[in-house]
Image (cartoon, rainbow, N blue to C red; front, side):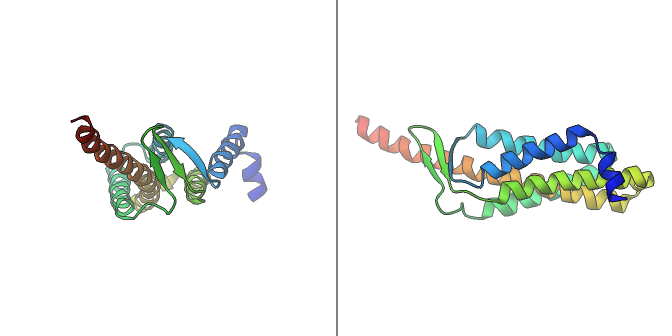
Length: 176
C-alpha cells in the first residue's frame, strides 16, 4: 500500500518536498539575512499551514477556531523565549547574523508531512473530513506550526525595533 500511495502522489509534491528540504537545509548553516527575508518565509509557511487546514476542512468553525487558538498560543509561547545565542542585528546594514538551526527544517517537514498524511487519509477515508475530532486535531497541529514560525519571526522584529529605538536617543544626543 505505501508504494501505491507514492505512485499516486502528483509529481509536483516531490518538487515541493525538494524545495522545502533545500530551504530548511540552508538555514542549518550560519547566515546573514534581511528582515524582509525573515518575514516572507514564516508568512508563507503560516499560509501553507492555513491552506492545509482549509483544503481539508473548508471553513468549518471548529477547524478555524482550533487553528487560530493553537497559532496564538504557540506564538505567545515562542515570544517568551529568548533569542538563540549568536543572533545579532546590524542597524547599519539592517541585516541579522543568525546561527544555523534545524528548527525551520523540522517545522517545514512537519507541515509538509502533516499535509501529505492528511491528504492520504482523506483520500482513503473521505468521511474523516466531517468528523469534528479529526478536524480539531489536524487544525491544532497546523496552527501550532504557524504559531511557532510566526513567533520566531516576531522575535527578530522585536530585536530590530529595540535596536532602532536604542539608536534614536543616542542619535538625538549626538545631534545636540
